[in-house]
Length: 618
Image (cartoon, rainbow, N blue to C red):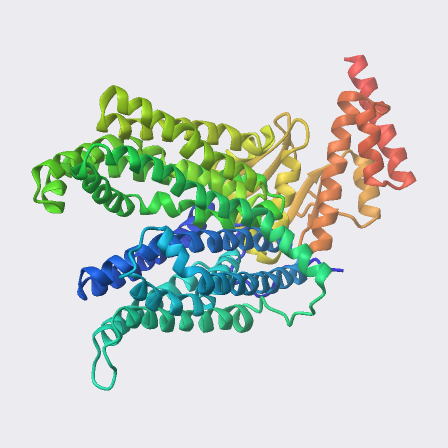
C-alpha cells in the first residue's frame, strides 16, 4: 500500500506559489533544450554535407525513419511525464518511484523491439522509401550503428520525461546541451579523421552521435537514481508493472499516434505544393525552417506546461491548472503576434537572404506573410493538447491533432488551392489553425467547473496573501491551496482578502474567517458555540479581542489544518442553518459529515432556533 507523502526527491513542487515564475522556470530551459536538439541535427547535416552529395542524400533518407521512431518514443516520454507528475501531485512517493522504474523498463522493451526490427528490415524499408541500390551501403553504414545504439536515445527521452515531471526542466536542458557540444566536437574528428582517429565518413557521424547520447544516458540514470531518488530496484511483479504501463500508455500511445498524424497531413500538403513547381517547394522548405525558429516558444509551451498541469491535477487543484493554461496562452499569443509583426516588417529581406532566385523569393515571402497570420493561435492547440495529456485525457489530444491536420488543414488547403492557387493552400492551413484553436479552447473549458474558473480569477491581492501564507509554512503550502480550492467550491462561498496579506473566507460577502500569514485562523462564532469550542480546546481566545465572538486556531501542522477545515465547515453549517433551516437536506448532510458531539449539535440547534425567532420578530 502506497504511503501518502510528499516526495523528498523532486527539487521543486509545482502545486503552490506564483504560477508565472514557475512556468518561466519550466519554459526557458525547454526552449533552450529544443534549440540544442536542433543544433545537433544541423551540425550532423553540415559536416556530412561536406563529404559530398551521396553521403548527404543517404542521411536524408534516414530522416523519415528516425522521425517515426522519435515520435513513438517521445509519446512514451509524454506518457511518463503525465503519470509521474500526477503521482507527485497526489503525494504518493512509492508510486512515483514505481512509475519511473517501470517507465524505464518499458523503454528498454521498446528499444529491444525497435533495434531488432531495424537491423532485420532496414534494407527493404529504405528500398521502399526510394533509396537507390548505390545508396544502401551508405545508409546501412549509418543506420546499423544507430539501431544498435538506439537504447541511448530512447531511455533518455523517457527518463527526461520523468525528470521534467518533478519540475526540474534544467537538468534535461543541460543534458541536451552536453549532447550538442560533444556531438559538435566529435563529428569532424570521426567523419574526417584526426591524428590516430581514421576518417570514417558517414559511419563517423553515427559514432559521434552514439557517444554523445551514451553520455546523456549515463547522466540521466545518475540524476534519476542518485540525485532525485526516483528509481527503485525492480521486483518484476508483472501485475504492478502492467498497472504502471497502462497508466503510461493511456497517454503515451495516443501521444505517439498524434506525433504520427502530423506527418501524414504534411505529406498531403507537400504533394499539393509540389504541383506548383520546384520554386514553390523550395520556398515551402525554407519557410518551414524559418518558422521553426520564429515559433520555438509557442511550440514548446505545451511541453513546458505538462509537469505543472500534471502535478496540480494530481493534487486536485484545477484552479491552478486554469491559471497555468491562461498564462501560457497569453505568452503564446503575444509571441505569435510579435513574430507576425517581425515577418511583416522583414519578409522581403528574409527572402533575399534565403535565396538568390527571384521566383523562390516571391513564393517564400508569400508563404511567410500568409502563414504568419496564424502565428497568434499557433501555440494554443499545443497548450490544449499538452493539458489533455497531463490530465490523462490523451484521446482528446489525438482527436485535436487529427482534426487540425486531416479533417481541416487538407480539405481547406484543397479548396484554397482551387480559389487562390499557392496562396490559397497557405490560407487554408491558417484557417485550419484558427478553427482548431477555437474548438480546442472550448473543449478544454469543459474540463473545469464554474467554481474552478472563478477561483482562477482571484485578485492579485488574494494571490499575494495566499503566497505569503504558503511561504511562512512551505510544508503545508499544497494543503493550503487544497483548502482554498475546497472552500471556493462551497455554495455561495468565495475566497478573497479583507486586509493586507490576509486570506479571507466569505459567504455572501460576509466574512466567516480569515487566515493570517503566520498561520492564525480567526473565526467568529455565536457565544454559546464559541464557549463550547474553547472548552474543547479547538480554539483559543482572540489575542486582541479576548471577550468578543472572535476566536483563533493556530495552524502549524497537518493536524491543525484539518481542524481548521473542520471549523470552517462549522461556519458553512451555520450559514445553511440560517438560510435553509435545521431540517433541510443540505444542512443535515453537512452536519453528518462534521460528526459533531451531541453537545455541539444541541448548541447549534439552539443557535439556529434563536436566529429563526429573531428573523420572525424582525
